[in-house]
Image (cartoon, rainbow, N blue to C red; front, side):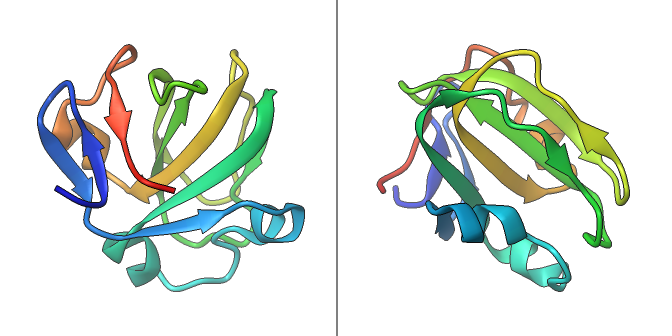
Amino acid sequence: MKGLINKTRKFRLSRSIVFRKNFFSQGTGLTLRPKKVVSECAWIFVFSRPRRVSLTMALVLFPIDVIFLDSKKKVVEIKKDFRPWQLYFPKLPCSYVIELKDGLIEKSSTHVGDQLNFDE
């Protein structure tokens, strides 16, 4: 199986992935993009070292789900139904942030501690 997989639940979260690896691409993220871009693929933000990343939904006009992973791709935190104009400050450092279509965390039964898999 290719794409973004929850190995623990044996569930494909997305067939396609968009990687955001540099400062500029991470800063713009989903800003002013149409909802279909996150409906069709997972957006994975990759960090060179674990960090606490604050997220803002300024100028993102639709809700999303967010998964925070450690360096071994294990889920360390989840934010469901992240809505436009909200801010979020995760409690733990992470190596990856994954932005997904809203409702997908619930549909996949993804929980903290689950192991995800994807190829960079």
